[in-house]
Image (cartoon, rainbow, N blue to C red; front, side, top):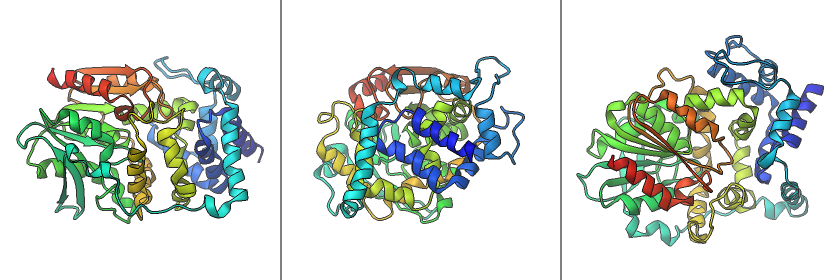
Length: 427
């Protein structure tokens, strides 16, 4: 019991709260599903058992926390673990990671609204009509393809002449094809640009089974779509979850990736190794554990008419900068339209519910040229992981840290992203 209280205190008091929904991720998950937390931590350890020799498949969460906060160092000496929980707390409370009073106020307001207006707070509505921006013909043509092997129908938006090199875009969470609108307009002059709705998103089919979102199916989707479009190679671009799939696709199908562009997503092996050695990143990724719950995350993301989703895109700490220029009210409504459809949030969250089956990777090295773009102010992923990705690249690797950019890089700083991509693609 004492250890549980210490863990709760560590989460609630020491971790930087970017907005109220982040805090809910930690508190609600621990309160309602301690057992699932243990299973998730155990899975994390098993994923990295090649690097932490004293941990085995039957390790319990108690052992995991002991390892995370014990004194140790890697054999190479490049990573030094914190000597105690207190040292970790001190480090996490420095500088930008200090808890601000405004975050506590936001949390209080959310809980207070539940007390005073439970009916209103727990309401949301399905958007029946798509906003006009989703029908903008300058972005491309809406197309559909049914893959024979999986039987699923995929939606994608395509522009540019057929026969030109294929530039394929994979979106992240909780996005859909529309997150690439600035790139569709920019690159259609020289490429056949295609932005897909990944399975479970947008107008693509939404399999009901959680197992339908396993890694091998997501990677096969990309292969099948490239082949359906009449290509055997492409320039692949991925952000967030789309970046994870892009990394792994390039690993397993190097002959199909002429160049790889990844935005704010580390190599999967870098992420797992880094998170296990840095409690601050593990806690920033605590939504991975919260999303293992059934139904409850969907509820929390929907309440108050998707206020949490709005906060992800518009909050000062984690949202898209210069709101109004790059993310208009109509753009935000496009996301709410897509995510408010029946089952949409479940499809998106099922990626997380399979995340612990993804690793460890049997293969890790990328043989295609890689451009990694990273927003300096990403509040979900620590920047130190970006440079480490170099060790898994067996070709040209370029890393650009974009000052002032958030996690939503291609929407936050589209002009800079497009310029850097042009330079890389023309090399």
